[in-house]
Length: 279
Image (cartoon, rainbow, N blue to C red; front, top):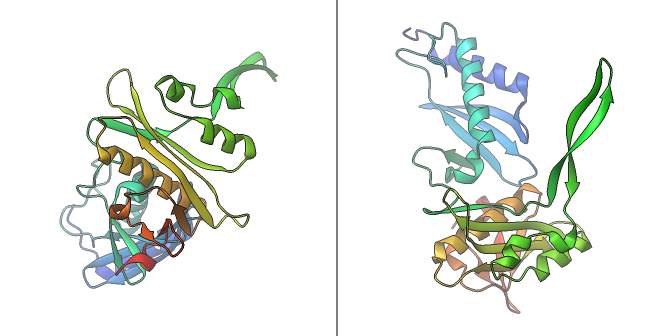
């Protein structure tokens, strides 16, 4: 149907709906809904990330339909549908893949034409440190029920496939054993087999207050494009921000295009707070 609601009605509905809900999805907490001349900003915090994020929402106009294509008949119904769409975008990685601009102290995310986290031909993910194992449990009304339980991977087995591919996993295994590992990302060829594995990046806690993360290594195999190493490091930076780190430090060279800057005494540093590192 054609939306005949005023902008004030749409704004009030969206603000009332999202602030009432509060949490859009795991890790996303709505802070405010702000009216602008040509739309609205949904302002939210993401996990323990030090940045404050926002997403632009246009005022409804013309024929308005829900995410499943059904006509929307009221501002409240429209607002609930906007919240559903936004929750889905956040659950599928909007904070990591969205294009970013800084406005009014917010990091404004745009999903349009956003690049994939993994470069073309490759996939980037985290090295799994737990495995799901079946467990049979007696429950009321059922003799036994099958449940999956997360079991930590034994340290000597962690990343064994990377070691088999010729990569040194000594540092990440030591960090796992010490309880200091923040992130262990891996890269592999994007095909049906998900092989071969072609790179890894590893980060640890630098301080006991858990405000600084150290990028210990970022490696790709010979012949693998540099953009794969950059993607591995970006995953580390996102992971660091999401656990509340304010800076990432490293001695790994060649990362200036990702925002790392030299510091006195050697090494490089990147602030996870996007607003702080804007020129």
